[in-house]
Image (cartoon, rainbow, N blue to C red; front, side, top):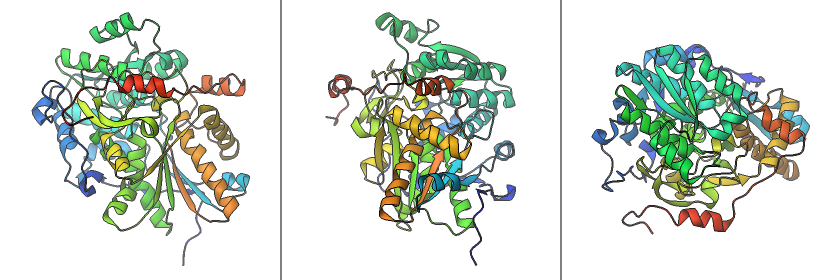
Length: 459
């Protein structure tokens, strides 16, 4: 007899997954390797070790191991905020008048306010295990920087954060949380690095980008002994750590015999999306089940829907490895809007390969429509969602309304990556009706795509 589904489905402590799932192991077409920009050859472990932690580099390059054991120290830290609830959005369903069943995986029930802590704690753990003094990183909206600050404080590591300038100015309280946890936070681009000074000399009025901040953080890591660079999205290792989201989601659904029809995630660099869909995509790749999977990105930074699948630099300063991904060009700087952490010019190589293979679809949405959905969700479900998450909410509502028209009782699952309590500047603009939609022209995107690096075999 099927149990009645509660508002919130929690796994018990003993049901929290003890292994991460590596979706690459089930991919017929593996993601293209990272390339050394100097030689054009695939990066080796030796190439990566000066930049990232050695154990993380092994995870980065492993396309074949299906499951990785989660170290006990990380499992213990998880117990502070995991398992995260899978919530049945009964109130939203009622407000929409839809026959659809809507669930959201809520990852905002920790001080960092987002899913980013899942990878931050793993990367900090491996840095500490390697005996490092500290780590450097970038952050867009601030969730990753906040999460890493927390993780570094836990393991007594120094933490240097380069925060995208427009977010640094728009979200001073997010910055102060980082500083409270001991991090040094610098607006990017800055005068503290060679690449920052170069970018400012060429673009003195720039509002910054994740690509700029990555360049600065990498420069500091490789020029300071005892430091390594860590990244909150895009990389294979990050998607591996974030698989905890999807594994918990699937376990919660299975607990009540629920089969999802549609899974929706916001897409910036790929961390939340890749983590949420991981076990479902695994089933799809193995031919065990089928799901409609939708990636939702901002119309102001439409990597999937308007970018090119090609090798490109991951950073504006062009000092990082080349990754084959859907990209708008490493020199592309999005408008200073409120997509926050979704303002990266490229997309995860894993997600890019899966998208190229037609394993899921992508949609771009405008920010005023996103905040309309965020406000509607907040008023009926009682959680103020992060702007990033609200992209997924927008499409979940749209799909639920389609079900209302057709009478279909689809089960929709989306990722609520975190809370929006540090994003009130954006909500203020929306409520005051001063928010606008800035969408790059075809000509602008072509200008940046024309500057893609020359890689043998790439058009």
